[in-house]
Image 1 (cartoon, each protein chain N blue to C red):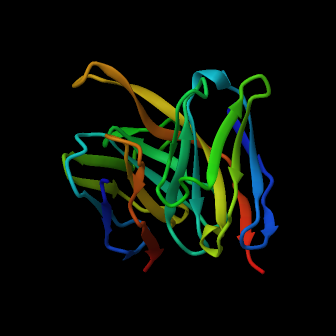
Image 2 (cartoon, rainbow over the protein chains, first blue to last red; image 1 turned 45 degrees about the horizontal axis):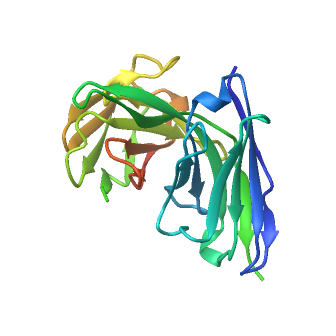
Image 3 (cartoon, rainbow over the protein chains, first blue to last red; image 1 turned 120 degrees about the horizontal axis):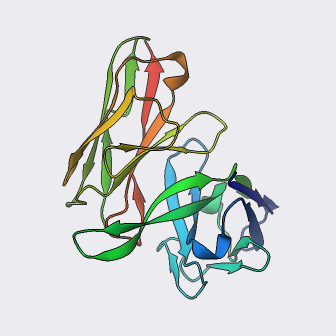
Length: 128
Length: 108
């Protein structure tokens, strides 16, 4: 059974830092890209960042580029999100999600796809 | 960046009736679209991928259709547990990945 368990959320002051973790189990972690998605209170889903299975490729939303860093430790089956220079607008529940790769018959390549499993989320509150 | 627009924002439907939710992409995403269901206090759950393929364990009353820029999620006979927020997501070309703003399906 696939399980994703986030931790590390909490209350932090504007300008502060926080590191989120996502412990994965039930699948071969190193074989899959992973992603972070956040949801501000009462709002919709916003994609934040993604990382390849090897960790060699990383991707960010413009809203967090230069402030957040995604990483992974495949020996520990754990995904991370280092968040620096936090702002009030970063307040949200942060979810980690497992990315499916699929074969695109139009291009003949495997591509990053949808998110088939999600963690339960961890709340980050940025406030003074 | 591809912008996903869902309509309506809120849909009121009676149990047992059919619900039709729409999602539009700002440019073609082929059939590379997923739908998720989210209930209060819970993580999103994958319903549909490839615009029309149900995920494992998803009841047959959920169906997806469309391609290019116009997509539909249909729930054929609403059950009490189906009242939730639904999001579409394009994965044709990311990053950035993009979700619609959601449709809240509420009991009429």
